Amino acid sequence: MRKKLGEEELHKLLELLKERLRFLGKSPLLILDSTGIPQRGKTQGLKWMRGGFPRVVPGHARLCLAIRYSQEEKLLLPVGMSVGEGYAPDPLLGAKALNAANPGGLLLADAGFDSGKVYEEAEGKYIQMIQLKGGGKVRAPRRREILKAFRLDLYRLRAVGEGIFGALKTRLNGRLRNLSVSNPQKEALLLVVGYVLRVFLALFRWLLSLRSSRSTRRAILAFS
Image 1 (spheres, helix red, strand yellow):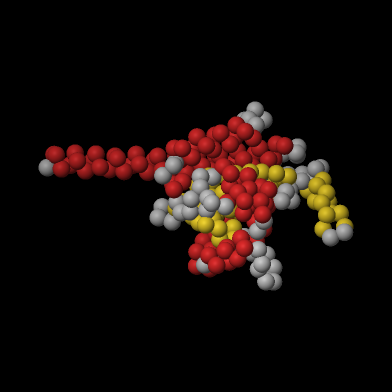
Image 2 (cartoon, rainbow, N blue to C red; image 1 turned 30 degrees about the horizontal axis):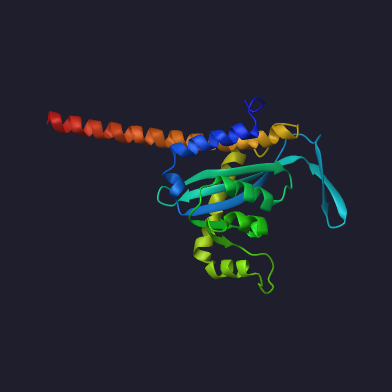
């Protein structure tokens, strides 16, 4: 399936599922986070720079998600996603994921998303609560506003979003199964769509059981 579907089709599938679960998409909390998922095998070398020295590591995909968290239902719903090669910059992936999410609510993100691209995408759409980089004096007006809005009790809820990445990596046994450059990225997106589909089916079964129990209760009352 992942070979036949492109990234655009996978995003369309997510949009269709979001429409079915739109009542969850109205949650006031939006968590922005990313993770790297390594591939099986080491034939794909990924070169990157740390300081002045090049490093080579096994290739992997970097997955970024904008996640709505419904505290009442205790449910996590990915509403925006983006993917890139390993060590793809978080700000670029984060801006793309935010672009797909419906505006509104509080945006929680770590210091990796403390970037102009993320601020521009989020401006006027979300109340931003992003942990700022460094410990120096904050001069930029935009960063000062974010610092004023920061509340540790709310920001701690950002960690809840990691539950989705944990669930995906558990199913993968920690790794993607492809050795090509593009297939791991498509597989990561397909896993997110599959996760949302499982949420949808779980809620559907719950609604069916609720309707069934009400019908049984009415039948018992009618019989008595």
